[in-house]
Image (cartoon, rainbow, N blue to C red; front, side, top):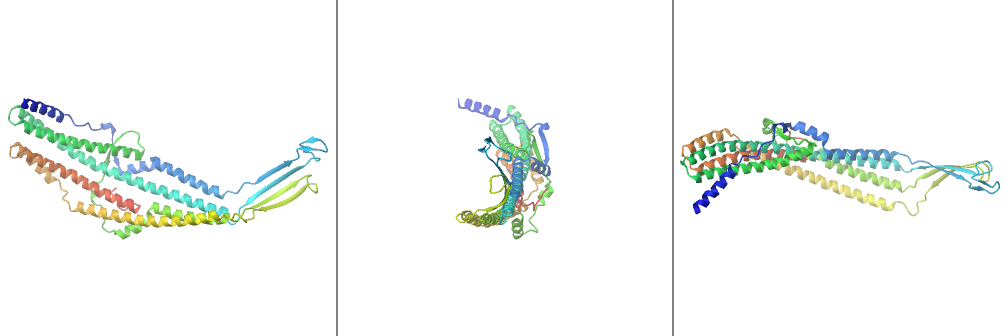
Length: 428
């Protein structure tokens, strides 16, 4: 009874293990993609960048608005009923018509100060756009290289699954002839099942990153991308010739988020100037014509008007502007410290990954030759199934981990570029 149950379970397991691997994308849906092409499409079509560009345009429009003069005010007065002539709305010489024109003039440089505030606000939006571009470009480049190395690892699994499938088929035939035990075939097929599961998990990660890449490039075709990279240039990435202090200085000059904070300080400085200018009242200059309602006919007069700053001298807004300026200065200092820490941490990470990479034997030809010998030794029964599978597991792990090491190293260099604010290390 127990033997029957064992045979039934073995048959079920064998049927699961021998299912075909997941199908690769159709050839017509596959697109080879270089990093430069990806960045070009990203800059042109990314919706987040497009939205921020509209914010920049809106801020620049406010500069024009701040420079505009106040509109003049024209008022007309007409008597509704003439008691002498008993006329309604008498517009003749016997009635009275009065016209007044008034123009407001800003004093103490208010319009200039308002324009300066708008200009600094536009600068903040421009630097915010640059910082968004920096962040999204880092996301694009990291996703691009992650995809590249994961697809290299999928190639390892594809090669090993195909090889192991042939081995399983061969030993299945030997089992059918009664030459080997069922448990040995089950061990082989279980390992094949493990390889396929690991490959599928990697394909799931790739599918997620493919979607992220298409979103960044605003691609609606659903294409499956094959990132292309120059292995020689990737290997040549090096920290030689650059110091941590140099990169920190470069970041202090190039980081757009830091420039945005600096522009915000200038914006609050100009806003303080504007609020002080608003404490000076505006001058209203006008002209009055009154045809018959004054002490003489056709009365003409010049009017001047100004608010007397007794109670409201804009004290609250001035104090608020002073506090906001101090807040922006504190935020600038915090951002400068953040930039320094970002570069220091990215520098250490890049150095550690590069040292690990440079100290690792990256030659795989010896492994390839060894595995051919392992296959032959197992076929001659010089190795047990456990030893055979252990060699295969080590071979696969070595290649996959080597690709992970390469990916981590390139990602560390990209993170250093991101921390500095410009592509100091470029493999494209």
